[in-house]
Image 1 (tube, one colour):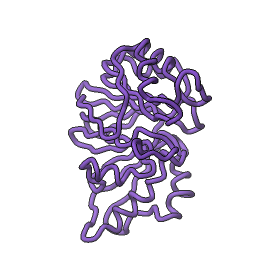
Image 2: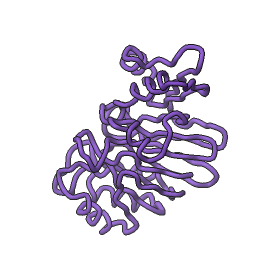
Image 3: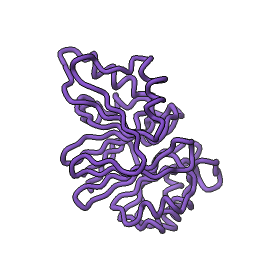
Image 4: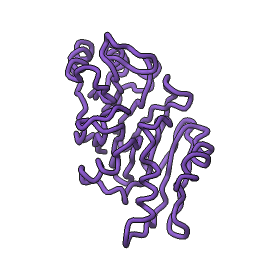
Length: 248
């Protein structure tokens, strides 16, 4: 299993950090977790083909996490001399189907007829794709917010999406190989619905991951400062950068 950080930023435009998106490659599947503005361009910059994506998981429906979904579907439909054959699976919280049908489909979010299908799956606890298991945990951000756990061959990865502090997320993440947590603001700039370094460290102490990665970095203060604040509680912490890869 491999993770590549496609976008480590937020809704605030930045030339250093694109909006949230993560690419996971397993033995059988290529997965996106979130698909914010600029994701397709970021995929191209990082040598990842949007044509080969099998599954897209959405942590929630805020624009900076989902705005390039329409762009992805239109690219799959209209790239010259390309006919997609495999279905595209989209995963979200219960209620995602209604959201997709009311918001995405009317804006060009339909698969090209007779070539492939868009399959909507609403995850309640766990979905399985061969040897790959995808499980979810309800987080404290928006009504539909989810963290995702990806497990295959004894290896595991968790991506939190946006969330406020919740010890239960630490329990969900117990002994994971790689834990990716949002760390939106510095300790002094706490905002409801987002994590700060001391909270990331506290979750990691509960989870005991092999490695912690901080992402979703608002440009209000230095990401390096957030890294140092987190490392006071959990030493094996890394600050995400766009294009960074992790082998799990």
